[in-house]
Image 1 (cartoon, rainbow, N blue to C red):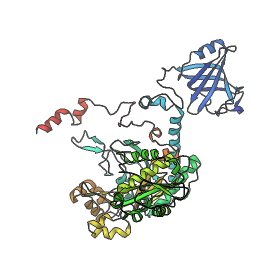
Image 2: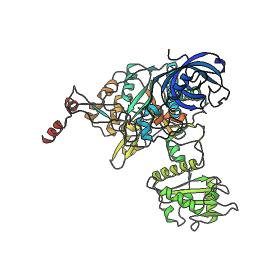
Image 3: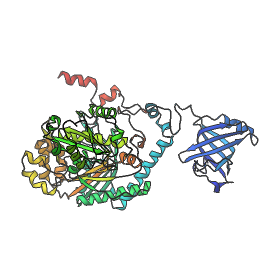
Image 4: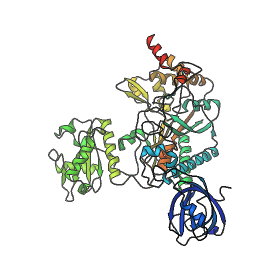
Length: 593
Ligand code: ASP
Protein backbone atom coordinates (compact mmCIF):
# COMPACT_ATOMS: atom_id res chain seq x y z
CA UNK A 1 0.00 0.00 0.00
CA UNK A 2 1.31 3.42 -0.90
CA UNK A 3 -0.59 5.43 1.63
CA UNK A 4 -3.03 5.26 4.50
CA UNK A 5 -3.36 9.04 4.63
CA UNK A 6 -2.47 12.02 2.50
CA UNK A 7 0.06 14.69 3.51
CA UNK A 8 -2.56 17.22 4.53
CA UNK A 9 -4.85 15.37 6.88
CA UNK A 10 -3.07 14.24 10.04
CA UNK A 11 -3.95 16.09 13.24
CA UNK A 12 -3.40 15.76 16.99
CA UNK A 13 -6.31 13.33 17.15
CA UNK A 14 -4.25 10.92 15.04
CA UNK A 15 -1.33 10.83 17.48
CA UNK A 16 -0.21 7.25 18.09
CA UNK A 17 -1.43 5.93 14.73
CA UNK A 18 0.85 3.94 12.44
CA UNK A 19 0.60 5.59 9.04
CA UNK A 20 2.05 5.38 5.56
CA UNK A 21 2.38 8.51 3.43
CA UNK A 22 3.65 8.98 -0.12
CA UNK A 23 4.71 12.23 -1.71
CA UNK A 24 7.48 14.52 -2.81
CA UNK A 25 10.39 15.79 -0.74
CA UNK A 26 9.77 19.52 -0.37
CA UNK A 27 12.73 20.22 1.91
CA UNK A 28 15.08 18.46 4.24
CA UNK A 29 16.91 19.75 7.29
CA UNK A 30 19.80 17.82 8.76
CA UNK A 31 20.64 18.55 12.39
CA UNK A 32 23.04 15.64 12.91
CA UNK A 33 21.07 13.59 15.39
CA UNK A 34 17.77 14.51 13.78
CA UNK A 35 16.84 14.84 10.13
CA UNK A 36 13.56 16.50 9.18
CA UNK A 37 11.85 16.03 5.84
CA UNK A 38 8.83 18.02 4.65
CA UNK A 39 6.75 15.62 2.60
CA UNK A 40 4.35 17.19 0.14
CA UNK A 41 1.40 16.12 -1.95
CA UNK A 42 -1.51 18.13 -3.28
CA UNK A 43 -3.26 18.00 0.07
CA UNK A 44 -0.49 19.56 2.13
CA UNK A 45 2.82 19.04 3.86
CA UNK A 46 3.64 16.71 6.74
CA UNK A 47 6.87 16.72 8.70
CA UNK A 48 8.82 13.46 8.91
CA UNK A 49 11.49 13.07 11.57
CA UNK A 50 14.38 10.61 11.50
CA UNK A 51 16.28 10.05 14.74
CA UNK A 52 19.78 8.67 14.45
CA UNK A 53 19.43 6.98 17.82
CA UNK A 54 16.36 5.05 16.73
CA UNK A 55 17.68 3.81 13.42
CA UNK A 56 21.03 4.90 12.08
CA UNK A 57 20.68 3.21 8.70
CA UNK A 58 17.26 4.80 8.08
CA UNK A 59 18.64 8.18 9.04
CA UNK A 60 21.54 7.78 6.62
CA UNK A 61 19.13 7.02 3.82
CA UNK A 62 16.98 10.04 4.68
CA UNK A 63 20.05 12.24 4.32
CA UNK A 64 20.47 11.06 0.74
CA UNK A 65 17.04 12.30 -0.30
CA UNK A 66 17.07 15.19 -2.72
CA UNK A 67 14.40 17.74 -3.50
CA UNK A 68 11.38 16.34 -5.33
CA UNK A 69 12.31 12.70 -4.74
CA UNK A 70 9.15 10.60 -4.55
CA UNK A 71 9.12 8.51 -1.41
CA UNK A 72 6.94 6.27 0.69
CA UNK A 73 7.27 6.96 4.41
CA UNK A 74 6.00 4.78 7.17
CA UNK A 75 5.92 5.66 10.85
CA UNK A 76 3.97 6.77 13.87
CA UNK A 77 2.14 10.07 14.36
CA UNK A 78 3.22 12.04 17.41
CA UNK A 79 2.79 15.51 18.81
CA UNK A 80 5.41 18.01 17.73
CA UNK A 81 7.33 19.83 20.39
CA UNK A 82 7.94 22.77 18.10
CA UNK A 83 4.54 23.37 16.52
CA UNK A 84 3.98 25.20 13.23
CA UNK A 85 0.72 27.15 13.47
CA UNK A 86 0.88 28.08 9.77
CA UNK A 87 0.30 24.55 8.62
CA UNK A 88 -2.86 22.52 9.18
CA UNK A 89 -0.68 19.49 10.00
CA UNK A 90 1.66 21.66 12.06
CA UNK A 91 0.87 20.09 15.42
CA UNK A 92 2.12 16.63 14.48
CA UNK A 93 5.05 14.87 12.89
CA UNK A 94 5.85 11.30 11.86
CA UNK A 95 8.42 9.37 13.79
CA UNK A 96 9.93 7.40 10.94
CA UNK A 97 10.12 3.64 10.81
CA UNK A 98 10.39 2.86 7.10
CA UNK A 99 11.42 4.67 3.92
CA UNK A 100 11.29 3.69 0.25
CA UNK A 101 12.48 5.79 -2.61
CA UNK A 102 9.79 5.35 -5.24
CA UNK A 103 11.59 7.54 -7.75
CA UNK A 104 14.52 9.91 -7.45
CA UNK A 105 14.35 13.35 -9.06
CA UNK A 106 16.75 15.48 -11.00
CA UNK A 107 17.37 18.85 -9.38
CA UNK A 108 14.43 21.04 -10.41
CA UNK A 109 15.35 24.03 -12.58
CA UNK A 110 13.57 26.43 -10.23
CA UNK A 111 12.43 26.40 -6.63
CA UNK A 112 9.08 24.81 -5.90
CA UNK A 113 8.07 27.53 -3.49
CA UNK A 114 5.21 30.03 -3.34
CA UNK A 115 7.37 32.67 -4.95
CA UNK A 116 9.57 30.83 -7.39
CA UNK A 117 12.83 32.00 -8.92
CA UNK A 118 11.82 30.58 -12.33
CA UNK A 119 10.98 32.90 -15.23
CA UNK A 120 7.69 32.53 -17.09
CA UNK A 121 8.94 30.48 -20.01
CA UNK A 122 10.97 28.14 -17.82
CA UNK A 123 8.03 27.51 -15.56
CA UNK A 124 5.80 26.85 -18.57
CA UNK A 125 8.31 24.43 -20.02
CA UNK A 126 8.33 22.52 -16.74
CA UNK A 127 4.66 23.05 -16.11
CA UNK A 128 4.41 19.82 -14.08
CA UNK A 129 6.86 21.31 -11.59
CA UNK A 130 5.16 24.69 -11.63
CA UNK A 131 1.86 23.02 -10.84
CA UNK A 132 3.39 21.53 -7.70
CA UNK A 133 3.65 25.08 -6.33
CA UNK A 134 0.76 26.16 -4.12
CA UNK A 135 -0.20 29.33 -6.02
CA UNK A 136 -0.70 27.36 -9.24
CA UNK A 137 -1.98 24.17 -7.64
CA UNK A 138 -4.60 26.09 -5.64
CA UNK A 139 -5.94 27.75 -8.78
CA UNK A 140 -6.25 24.47 -10.65
CA UNK A 141 -8.08 22.94 -7.69
CA UNK A 142 -10.23 26.04 -7.37
CA UNK A 143 -11.23 25.74 -11.01
CA UNK A 144 -12.31 22.14 -10.50
CA UNK A 145 -14.55 23.23 -7.66
CA UNK A 146 -16.13 26.02 -9.72
CA UNK A 147 -16.77 23.52 -12.53
CA UNK A 148 -18.35 21.07 -10.10
CA UNK A 149 -20.64 23.70 -8.57
CA UNK A 150 -21.60 24.91 -12.04
CA UNK A 151 -22.67 21.40 -13.00
CA UNK A 152 -24.49 20.94 -9.73
CA UNK A 153 -26.44 24.18 -10.03
CA UNK A 154 -27.37 23.93 -13.67
CA UNK A 155 -28.29 20.26 -13.39
CA UNK A 156 -30.56 21.06 -10.46
CA UNK A 157 -32.14 23.80 -12.57
CA UNK A 158 -33.01 21.20 -15.18
CA UNK A 159 -30.22 21.84 -17.68
CA UNK A 160 -28.84 18.96 -19.74
CA UNK A 161 -25.12 18.76 -20.40
CA UNK A 162 -24.77 18.02 -24.10
CA UNK A 163 -21.54 17.90 -26.06
CA UNK A 164 -21.17 19.56 -29.42
CA UNK A 165 -18.46 18.73 -31.94
CA UNK A 166 -14.99 20.25 -32.19
CA UNK A 167 -14.58 19.64 -35.90
CA UNK A 168 -17.11 21.98 -37.44
CA UNK A 169 -17.59 24.64 -40.04
CA UNK A 170 -16.80 28.27 -39.35
CA UNK A 171 -18.95 30.11 -36.79
CA UNK A 172 -18.50 33.83 -37.35
CA UNK A 173 -18.01 35.33 -33.89
CA UNK A 174 -15.67 38.02 -34.96
CA UNK A 175 -12.36 36.18 -34.67
CA UNK A 176 -10.36 34.07 -37.08
CA UNK A 177 -10.92 30.32 -37.11
CA UNK A 178 -8.34 27.66 -36.49
CA UNK A 179 -8.70 25.21 -39.34
CA UNK A 180 -8.03 21.50 -39.59
CA UNK A 181 -7.39 19.88 -42.96
CA UNK A 182 -9.53 16.91 -43.84
CA UNK A 183 -7.52 13.94 -45.18
CA UNK A 184 -10.60 12.23 -46.52
CA UNK A 185 -11.79 15.35 -48.29
CA UNK A 186 -8.64 16.78 -49.86
CA UNK A 187 -8.59 20.54 -50.09
CA UNK A 188 -11.35 20.84 -47.50
CA UNK A 189 -11.08 22.00 -43.94
CA UNK A 190 -12.92 21.80 -40.68
CA UNK A 191 -12.86 24.78 -38.34
CA UNK A 192 -12.49 24.51 -34.58
CA UNK A 193 -15.48 26.18 -32.91
CA UNK A 194 -15.14 29.75 -31.71
CA UNK A 195 -18.14 28.74 -29.60
CA UNK A 196 -20.91 26.15 -29.96
CA UNK A 197 -23.31 28.95 -30.93
CA UNK A 198 -25.12 27.44 -33.89
CA UNK A 199 -25.16 23.94 -32.36
CA UNK A 200 -26.78 25.11 -29.18
CA UNK A 201 -29.43 26.92 -31.19
CA UNK A 202 -30.05 23.73 -33.16
CA UNK A 203 -30.41 21.91 -29.81
CA UNK A 204 -33.25 24.30 -29.00
CA UNK A 205 -34.92 23.43 -32.28
CA UNK A 206 -34.45 19.79 -31.29
CA UNK A 207 -36.41 20.46 -28.12
CA UNK A 208 -33.67 20.26 -25.44
CA UNK A 209 -34.93 23.44 -23.90
CA UNK A 210 -32.18 23.88 -21.29
CA UNK A 211 -28.65 23.06 -22.45
CA UNK A 212 -25.26 23.70 -20.96
CA UNK A 213 -21.72 22.64 -21.57
CA UNK A 214 -18.34 23.47 -20.08
CA UNK A 215 -16.64 23.66 -23.39
CA UNK A 216 -13.39 24.53 -25.13
CA UNK A 217 -13.55 27.37 -27.66
CA UNK A 218 -10.86 28.34 -30.13
CA UNK A 219 -10.14 31.80 -31.52
CA UNK A 220 -7.15 32.70 -33.62
CA UNK A 221 -6.90 36.27 -32.44
CA UNK A 222 -3.98 38.62 -32.48
CA UNK A 223 -2.01 38.70 -29.29
CA UNK A 224 -3.68 40.64 -26.60
CA UNK A 225 -2.77 40.60 -22.97
CA UNK A 226 -4.21 37.69 -21.07
CA UNK A 227 -5.95 35.98 -23.97
CA UNK A 228 -5.57 32.32 -24.76
CA UNK A 229 -6.16 30.87 -28.22
CA UNK A 230 -8.13 28.08 -26.56
CA UNK A 231 -10.26 28.88 -23.57
CA UNK A 232 -13.27 27.48 -21.78
CA UNK A 233 -16.84 28.68 -21.63
CA UNK A 234 -19.80 27.76 -19.50
CA UNK A 235 -22.10 27.76 -22.48
CA UNK A 236 -25.88 27.75 -22.09
CA UNK A 237 -29.04 28.08 -24.10
CA UNK A 238 -32.72 28.07 -23.12
CA UNK A 239 -35.92 27.90 -25.11
CA UNK A 240 -39.17 29.73 -24.29
CA UNK A 241 -37.43 32.39 -22.21
CA UNK A 242 -37.47 36.12 -21.96
CA UNK A 243 -34.34 38.14 -21.45
CA UNK A 244 -35.13 38.66 -17.79
CA UNK A 245 -35.47 34.93 -17.21
CA UNK A 246 -32.04 34.37 -18.70
CA UNK A 247 -30.55 37.12 -16.54
CA UNK A 248 -32.25 35.76 -13.40
CA UNK A 249 -31.03 32.22 -14.06
CA UNK A 250 -27.42 33.26 -14.53
CA UNK A 251 -27.52 35.74 -11.71
CA UNK A 252 -28.61 32.72 -9.67
CA UNK A 253 -25.71 30.64 -10.97
CA UNK A 254 -23.19 33.39 -10.27
CA UNK A 255 -24.48 33.91 -6.73
CA UNK A 256 -24.39 30.16 -6.13
CA UNK A 257 -20.78 29.91 -7.31
CA UNK A 258 -19.61 32.81 -5.16
CA UNK A 259 -21.45 31.51 -2.12
CA UNK A 260 -20.57 27.84 -2.43
CA UNK A 261 -16.96 28.23 -3.49
CA UNK A 262 -15.70 31.38 -1.75
CA UNK A 263 -18.49 32.05 0.72
CA UNK A 264 -19.30 35.49 -0.67
CA UNK A 265 -22.85 36.83 -0.73
CA UNK A 266 -23.02 38.92 -3.88
CA UNK A 267 -25.11 42.08 -3.79
CA UNK A 268 -28.02 42.43 -6.22
CA UNK A 269 -26.94 42.75 -9.85
CA UNK A 270 -27.96 46.18 -11.12
CA UNK A 271 -28.86 46.51 -14.79
CA UNK A 272 -27.55 49.37 -16.87
CA UNK A 273 -28.09 50.10 -20.53
CA UNK A 274 -25.10 50.19 -22.81
CA UNK A 275 -25.73 53.89 -23.50
CA UNK A 276 -25.78 54.72 -19.83
CA UNK A 277 -22.58 52.75 -19.17
CA UNK A 278 -20.80 54.62 -21.94
CA UNK A 279 -22.12 57.98 -20.77
CA UNK A 280 -21.24 57.46 -17.10
CA UNK A 281 -18.04 55.45 -17.44
CA UNK A 282 -16.94 55.49 -21.07
CA UNK A 283 -16.92 51.71 -21.05
CA UNK A 284 -19.33 48.83 -21.59
CA UNK A 285 -17.68 47.03 -18.70
CA UNK A 286 -17.42 49.62 -15.96
CA UNK A 287 -15.71 48.79 -12.70
CA UNK A 288 -18.32 49.76 -10.11
CA UNK A 289 -16.05 49.33 -7.10
CA UNK A 290 -15.44 53.06 -7.15
CA UNK A 291 -17.16 56.26 -8.30
CA UNK A 292 -15.35 58.93 -10.30
CA UNK A 293 -18.20 59.01 -12.76
CA UNK A 294 -17.87 61.10 -15.88
CA UNK A 295 -19.05 64.69 -15.72
CA UNK A 296 -20.05 66.34 -19.00
CA UNK A 297 -18.77 69.92 -19.13
CA UNK A 298 -19.49 70.51 -22.80
CA UNK A 299 -22.25 73.07 -22.44
CA UNK A 300 -20.61 74.81 -19.54
CA UNK A 301 -17.22 75.45 -21.07
CA UNK A 302 -17.73 76.25 -24.73
CA UNK A 303 -17.90 79.74 -26.21
CA UNK A 304 -15.46 81.36 -23.79
CA UNK A 305 -12.58 81.71 -26.20
CA UNK A 306 -10.65 78.55 -25.38
CA UNK A 307 -10.16 77.09 -28.86
CA UNK A 308 -9.41 73.52 -27.79
CA UNK A 309 -12.72 73.23 -25.99
CA UNK A 310 -14.65 75.19 -28.59
CA UNK A 311 -13.58 72.81 -31.32
CA UNK A 312 -14.21 69.65 -29.32
CA UNK A 313 -17.24 67.45 -29.79
CA UNK A 314 -17.25 66.62 -26.10
CA UNK A 315 -15.57 67.87 -22.93
CA UNK A 316 -15.72 65.45 -20.03
CA UNK A 317 -13.90 64.89 -16.79
CA UNK A 318 -13.71 63.12 -13.48
CA UNK A 319 -13.41 64.46 -9.95
CA UNK A 320 -10.74 63.06 -7.66
CA UNK A 321 -11.67 63.77 -4.05
CA UNK A 322 -8.82 65.04 -1.85
CA UNK A 323 -6.24 64.79 -4.60
CA UNK A 324 -5.48 68.46 -5.31
CA UNK A 325 -2.52 68.46 -2.92
CA UNK A 326 -1.23 65.13 -4.16
CA UNK A 327 -0.69 66.43 -7.67
CA UNK A 328 2.14 68.92 -8.04
CA UNK A 329 2.75 70.49 -11.45
CA UNK A 330 5.31 67.78 -12.05
CA UNK A 331 2.86 65.02 -11.20
CA UNK A 332 0.22 66.59 -13.46
CA UNK A 333 2.76 66.75 -16.27
CA UNK A 334 3.59 63.10 -15.78
CA UNK A 335 -0.07 62.21 -15.87
CA UNK A 336 -0.51 64.30 -19.01
CA UNK A 337 2.35 62.41 -20.66
CA UNK A 338 0.74 59.16 -19.60
CA UNK A 339 -2.48 60.23 -21.31
CA UNK A 340 -0.58 61.25 -24.44
CA UNK A 341 1.07 57.86 -24.91
CA UNK A 342 -0.01 56.26 -28.18
CA UNK A 343 -1.90 53.53 -26.28
CA UNK A 344 -4.26 56.23 -24.99
CA UNK A 345 -3.72 59.00 -27.48
CA UNK A 346 -5.12 62.01 -25.62
CA UNK A 347 -4.07 65.40 -26.95
CA UNK A 348 -3.77 66.83 -23.47
CA UNK A 349 -5.18 66.93 -19.99
CA UNK A 350 -6.79 69.92 -18.31
CA UNK A 351 -6.84 70.14 -14.54
CA UNK A 352 -8.72 72.27 -12.05
CA UNK A 353 -7.71 72.27 -8.39
CA UNK A 354 -10.32 73.42 -5.94
CA UNK A 355 -8.31 75.25 -3.29
CA UNK A 356 -9.27 75.22 0.38
CA UNK A 357 -9.94 79.00 0.30
CA UNK A 358 -12.46 78.65 -2.50
CA UNK A 359 -10.10 79.84 -5.24
CA UNK A 360 -9.02 77.71 -8.18
CA UNK A 361 -5.83 76.73 -9.87
CA UNK A 362 -6.16 75.46 -13.38
CA UNK A 363 -4.20 74.91 -16.56
CA UNK A 364 -6.93 76.87 -18.34
CA UNK A 365 -7.17 79.58 -15.68
CA UNK A 366 -6.49 82.35 -18.14
CA UNK A 367 -9.59 81.48 -20.17
CA UNK A 368 -12.00 81.05 -17.32
CA UNK A 369 -12.84 83.12 -14.27
CA UNK A 370 -13.03 81.65 -10.78
CA UNK A 371 -16.79 82.10 -11.06
CA UNK A 372 -16.86 79.90 -14.11
CA UNK A 373 -14.58 77.34 -12.56
CA UNK A 374 -16.88 77.30 -9.52
CA UNK A 375 -19.70 76.28 -11.85
CA UNK A 376 -17.58 73.43 -13.17
CA UNK A 377 -16.73 72.29 -9.67
CA UNK A 378 -20.39 72.47 -8.65
CA UNK A 379 -21.51 70.44 -11.61
CA UNK A 380 -18.92 67.79 -10.69
CA UNK A 381 -19.79 67.91 -7.01
CA UNK A 382 -16.17 68.86 -6.30
CA UNK A 383 -15.27 70.19 -2.86
CA UNK A 384 -12.24 72.10 -1.60
CA UNK A 385 -9.19 69.86 -1.91
CA UNK A 386 -10.54 68.01 -4.93
CA UNK A 387 -8.94 67.73 -8.33
CA UNK A 388 -10.80 67.79 -11.64
CA UNK A 389 -9.19 66.14 -14.64
CA UNK A 390 -10.72 67.00 -17.99
CA UNK A 391 -10.25 65.76 -21.54
CA UNK A 392 -11.82 66.89 -24.77
CA UNK A 393 -12.10 65.91 -28.40
CA UNK A 394 -14.04 63.54 -30.59
CA UNK A 395 -16.78 61.86 -28.55
CA UNK A 396 -15.99 58.16 -28.70
CA UNK A 397 -12.23 58.55 -28.47
CA UNK A 398 -12.48 60.99 -25.59
CA UNK A 399 -14.78 58.68 -23.65
CA UNK A 400 -12.30 55.84 -24.11
CA UNK A 401 -9.42 58.01 -22.97
CA UNK A 402 -11.23 59.16 -19.87
CA UNK A 403 -12.16 55.56 -19.09
CA UNK A 404 -8.46 54.68 -19.12
CA UNK A 405 -7.72 57.61 -16.85
CA UNK A 406 -10.51 56.66 -14.47
CA UNK A 407 -9.23 53.08 -14.19
CA UNK A 408 -5.66 54.27 -13.73
CA UNK A 409 -6.68 56.65 -10.96
CA UNK A 410 -8.73 53.85 -9.40
CA UNK A 411 -5.57 51.72 -9.38
CA UNK A 412 -3.36 54.48 -8.03
CA UNK A 413 -5.79 55.21 -5.22
CA UNK A 414 -6.09 51.54 -4.34
CA UNK A 415 -9.79 51.46 -5.12
CA UNK A 416 -9.61 48.40 -7.36
CA UNK A 417 -8.33 45.71 -5.06
CA UNK A 418 -9.63 43.86 -2.08
CA UNK A 419 -12.36 41.29 -2.11
CA UNK A 420 -15.21 43.58 -2.96
CA UNK A 421 -17.28 42.19 -5.84
CA UNK A 422 -19.51 44.46 -7.91
CA UNK A 423 -21.53 42.62 -10.53
CA UNK A 424 -23.48 44.42 -13.23
CA UNK A 425 -25.66 43.47 -16.19
CA UNK A 426 -25.08 45.70 -19.17
CA UNK A 427 -28.10 45.44 -21.46
CA UNK A 428 -29.50 46.88 -24.70
CA UNK A 429 -26.34 46.85 -26.76
CA UNK A 430 -26.48 48.25 -30.27
CA UNK A 431 -27.33 45.48 -32.73
CA UNK A 432 -24.96 46.61 -35.48
CA UNK A 433 -21.72 48.49 -35.53
CA UNK A 434 -20.88 50.61 -38.57
CA UNK A 435 -17.31 50.15 -39.73
CA UNK A 436 -16.30 53.45 -41.34
CA UNK A 437 -13.23 52.05 -43.05
CA UNK A 438 -14.74 48.91 -44.48
CA UNK A 439 -18.06 50.71 -45.03
CA UNK A 440 -20.04 47.82 -43.67
CA UNK A 441 -21.91 46.69 -40.60
CA UNK A 442 -20.55 44.21 -38.09
CA UNK A 443 -22.71 42.37 -35.58
CA UNK A 444 -21.90 43.83 -32.19
CA UNK A 445 -22.54 40.46 -30.50
CA UNK A 446 -22.93 37.90 -33.28
CA UNK A 447 -25.16 37.48 -36.33
CA UNK A 448 -27.76 35.38 -34.50
CA UNK A 449 -28.66 38.05 -31.98
CA UNK A 450 -32.20 39.35 -32.09
CA UNK A 451 -33.04 43.02 -32.19
CA UNK A 452 -35.26 44.11 -29.34
CA UNK A 453 -38.88 43.22 -30.01
CA UNK A 454 -39.83 46.87 -30.54
CA UNK A 455 -37.07 47.27 -33.17
CA UNK A 456 -37.99 44.29 -35.36
CA UNK A 457 -40.31 46.24 -37.68
CA UNK A 458 -37.75 49.01 -38.11
CA UNK A 459 -35.10 46.43 -38.88
CA UNK A 460 -37.20 44.82 -41.60
CA UNK A 461 -38.08 48.05 -43.43
CA UNK A 462 -35.82 50.80 -42.12
CA UNK A 463 -33.16 52.75 -44.00
CA UNK A 464 -29.42 52.77 -43.41
CA UNK A 465 -29.59 55.39 -40.67
CA UNK A 466 -32.28 53.41 -38.85
CA UNK A 467 -30.01 50.34 -38.81
CA UNK A 468 -27.42 52.24 -36.79
CA UNK A 469 -29.95 52.92 -34.06
CA UNK A 470 -31.27 49.35 -33.64
CA UNK A 471 -30.95 47.89 -30.16
CA UNK A 472 -30.18 44.23 -29.58
CA UNK A 473 -31.66 41.98 -26.94
CA UNK A 474 -28.09 41.34 -25.83
CA UNK A 475 -26.49 41.46 -22.41
CA UNK A 476 -23.11 41.16 -20.72
CA UNK A 477 -22.28 40.21 -17.17
CA UNK A 478 -19.53 42.42 -15.81
CA UNK A 479 -17.83 41.97 -12.45
CA UNK A 480 -15.29 44.52 -11.22
CA UNK A 481 -14.68 45.78 -14.73
CA UNK A 482 -14.12 42.34 -16.24
CA UNK A 483 -16.48 40.92 -18.82
CA UNK A 484 -17.52 37.58 -17.38
CA UNK A 485 -20.01 36.62 -20.02
CA UNK A 486 -22.38 37.68 -22.71
CA UNK A 487 -25.38 36.45 -24.55
CA UNK A 488 -28.58 37.38 -26.24
CA UNK A 489 -32.08 36.45 -27.22
CA UNK A 490 -31.71 34.94 -30.69
CA UNK A 491 -33.48 35.40 -33.95
CA UNK A 492 -35.65 32.32 -34.55
CA UNK A 493 -37.40 33.48 -37.67
CA UNK A 494 -35.91 32.74 -41.06
CA UNK A 495 -36.96 36.02 -42.62
CA UNK A 496 -35.41 38.14 -39.88
CA UNK A 497 -32.23 36.06 -39.88
CA UNK A 498 -31.94 36.51 -43.65
CA UNK A 499 -32.42 40.24 -43.24
CA UNK A 500 -29.62 40.30 -40.66
CA UNK A 501 -27.25 38.37 -42.91
CA UNK A 502 -28.03 40.80 -45.68
CA UNK A 503 -27.26 43.80 -43.45
CA UNK A 504 -23.99 42.13 -42.52
CA UNK A 505 -23.05 41.92 -46.16
CA UNK A 506 -23.81 38.28 -46.97
CA UNK A 507 -25.33 37.56 -50.36
CA UNK A 508 -28.30 35.15 -50.15
CA UNK A 509 -26.02 32.45 -51.67
CA UNK A 510 -23.30 33.02 -49.07
CA UNK A 511 -25.83 32.95 -46.26
CA UNK A 512 -27.31 29.73 -47.62
CA UNK A 513 -23.90 28.18 -48.15
CA UNK A 514 -22.64 28.95 -44.65
CA UNK A 515 -25.80 28.83 -42.59
CA UNK A 516 -28.27 26.90 -44.67
CA UNK A 517 -28.50 24.31 -41.89
CA UNK A 518 -29.62 26.93 -39.38
CA UNK A 519 -31.97 28.75 -41.73
CA UNK A 520 -33.39 25.36 -42.67
CA UNK A 521 -33.88 24.43 -39.02
CA UNK A 522 -35.78 27.68 -38.48
CA UNK A 523 -38.40 26.34 -40.90
CA UNK A 524 -39.17 23.33 -38.74
CA UNK A 525 -40.62 24.85 -35.63
CA UNK A 526 -37.76 26.77 -34.01
CA UNK A 527 -38.87 27.92 -30.55
CA UNK A 528 -38.03 31.40 -29.26
CA UNK A 529 -34.72 31.01 -27.48
CA UNK A 530 -31.74 32.77 -25.97
CA UNK A 531 -28.66 32.07 -23.96
CA UNK A 532 -25.36 33.16 -22.64
CA UNK A 533 -21.78 32.03 -22.25
CA UNK A 534 -19.47 32.78 -19.35
CA UNK A 535 -15.73 32.88 -19.84
CA UNK A 536 -14.89 30.16 -17.38
CA UNK A 537 -11.17 30.93 -17.01
CA UNK A 538 -11.90 34.62 -16.47
CA UNK A 539 -14.68 33.90 -13.98
CA UNK A 540 -12.27 31.80 -11.91
CA UNK A 541 -9.63 34.54 -12.05
CA UNK A 542 -12.09 37.25 -10.99
CA UNK A 543 -13.42 35.12 -8.13
CA UNK A 544 -9.86 34.69 -6.87
CA UNK A 545 -9.10 38.39 -7.36
CA UNK A 546 -6.42 37.50 -9.88
CA UNK A 547 -5.49 39.66 -12.86
CA UNK A 548 -4.43 36.77 -15.05
CA UNK A 549 -6.31 33.75 -16.38
CA UNK A 550 -3.18 31.82 -17.22
CA UNK A 551 -2.69 29.99 -13.96
CA UNK A 552 -6.28 28.83 -13.93
CA UNK A 553 -5.47 26.77 -17.01
CA UNK A 554 -3.42 23.64 -16.40
CA UNK A 555 -1.55 23.87 -19.69
CA UNK A 556 -1.75 27.43 -20.99
CA UNK A 557 -0.05 28.86 -24.05
CA UNK A 558 2.41 31.73 -23.81
CA UNK A 559 1.68 35.05 -25.47
CA UNK A 560 3.07 33.84 -28.76
CA UNK A 561 0.42 31.12 -28.69
CA UNK A 562 3.04 28.46 -27.94
CA UNK A 563 2.80 25.54 -25.59
CA UNK A 564 6.31 25.65 -24.17
CA UNK A 565 6.12 22.19 -22.63
CA UNK A 566 5.28 20.15 -25.69
CA UNK A 567 6.74 22.77 -28.02
CA UNK A 568 3.71 23.33 -30.20
CA UNK A 569 2.95 24.42 -32.81
CA UNK A 570 5.63 22.52 -34.74
CA UNK A 571 6.30 21.43 -38.30
CA UNK A 572 4.87 18.09 -39.42
CA UNK A 573 6.33 15.39 -41.64
CA UNK A 574 6.30 15.82 -45.36
CA UNK A 575 4.44 12.51 -45.55
CA UNK A 576 1.79 13.79 -43.25
CA UNK A 577 1.41 16.93 -45.35
CA UNK A 578 1.20 14.89 -48.51
CA UNK A 579 -1.50 12.73 -47.07
CA UNK A 580 -3.44 15.89 -46.29
CA UNK A 581 -2.89 17.29 -49.74
CA UNK A 582 -0.87 20.13 -48.23
CA UNK A 583 2.66 19.22 -49.28
CA UNK A 584 4.82 22.00 -50.67
CA UNK A 585 4.91 20.12 -53.97
CA UNK A 586 1.15 20.54 -54.21
CA UNK A 587 1.29 24.15 -53.28
CA UNK A 588 3.93 24.75 -55.95
CA UNK A 589 1.63 23.07 -58.44
CA UNK A 590 -1.20 25.31 -57.43
CA UNK A 591 1.08 28.26 -58.09
CA UNK A 592 2.02 26.93 -61.55
CA UNK A 593 -1.47 26.32 -62.73
N1 ASP B 1 -21.61 32.31 -28.30
C1 ASP B 1 -21.54 33.56 -27.62
C2 ASP B 1 -20.08 33.89 -27.28
O1 ASP B 1 -19.21 33.03 -27.38
C3 ASP B 1 -22.30 33.57 -26.33
C4 ASP B 1 -23.78 33.55 -26.53
O2 ASP B 1 -24.30 34.38 -27.28
O3 ASP B 1 -24.42 32.71 -25.90
O4 ASP B 1 -19.79 35.00 -26.90
